[in-house]
Length: 149
Image (cartoon, rainbow, N blue to C red; front, side, top):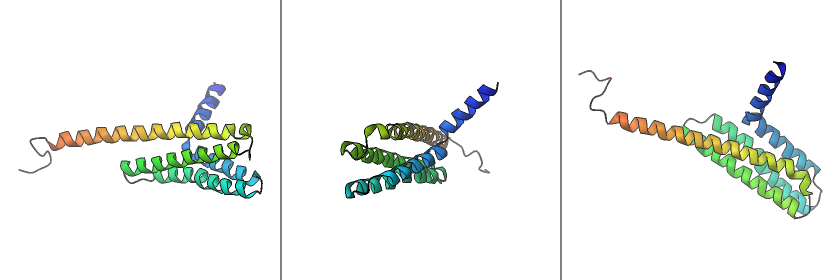
């Protein structure tokens, strides 16, 4: 029984985008701190820090969205930032600044976060379409259910 509870908690933590995006940002900061002091490494590193740390901020903004459209917009910005982060990570490895093996886990986490955020955006879009469909159909009713005639 205890193992089932632990597995359930691990599953919950793995799905917790708020925690995961924050941990991702912290890993990006640590990566930047460990980069060589060469101009190239620092320029690319600053780009990685900017895009990689903004993912969690955009996710938090999405969670406070005032509408489904705003939620989707913020999630899509977080997705753009993740894609940009992967680009900068690729440049770090392909330029020879950082060995590829060192960034494999970080790139993998970025890809997983992308999948999770895409899923969230799709779910929100689907729910929004269903709601729009319901509202369109209810507005075409021959009577107004709350009117006093």
